[in-house]
Image 1 (spheres, rainbow, N blue to C red):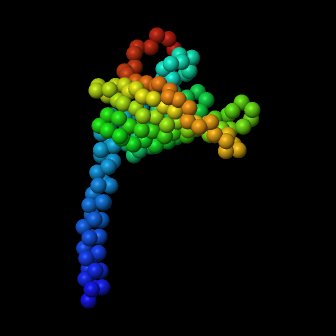
Image 2 (image 1 turned 180 degrees about the vertical axis):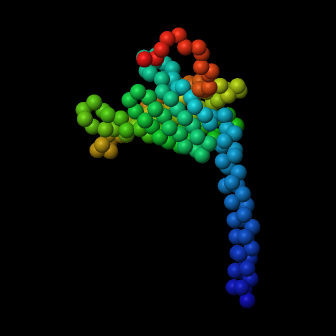
Length: 161
């Protein structure tokens, strides 16, 4: 008798928890889609060093992101840490110059400004050699970005080719 009641109670609890969990799971993408970090960004990856090139970063509402510059592509994940803040982790494979390919992991915390048009933050970089040796997280590295927007095409001044 006790076993039947226990089972019935567990089933009732599960029936109450599962729909609530499913409802929360379905609400998460809408919240992420509305987060101001979602979008396309032109990133200054080190505001303390003007010689470092900018990179492009696309932040998706599903919690993934992709970064591309003239030499590498990085993929990663992000999560909201507040209404206008987020944390990211991104990985890229980078040639070390000696024929070896290192794994570079970038971790950052960013804060989107009130207009949603820019963000600033700090990052750390970790280099992992093919043999597994690691530099540890180096930083902090100051970074900032401006949101990419659609600009109308201006009248052309000459043929392209």
